[in-house]
Length: 110
Image 1 (cartoon, rainbow, N blue to C red):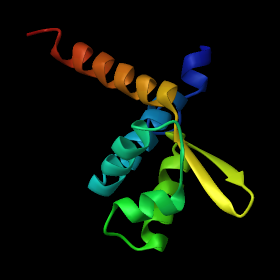
Image 2: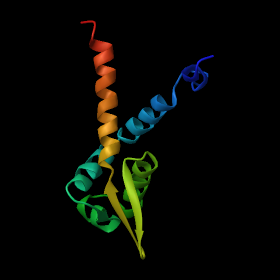
Image 3: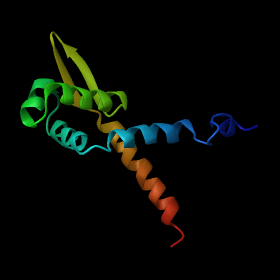
Image 4: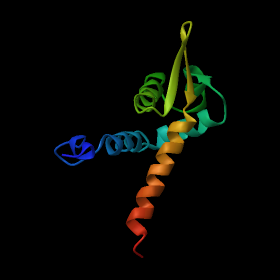
């Protein structure tokens, strides 16, 4: 059995496909897209700054940030008693490249 076949699960998903799916799922909420846009405009910011920018409760913003961190799209750094967040530009570039490759492979026969 080849190595790539051994790395697939019962559905035939490779670890790379699962990682892309996780990141795309994190991008599936409009508030998280807006949070990413806001974070991309600065090197990093505190959770409070994100809360002040959007008409969302602090707990809601924290949950959205947690999903983005868990997906690897945003980095979290504790800063004393506050939470600092920064966009992971390399991770977003990887998502972009994966989507572009998928579109190219699906549409190359046109």
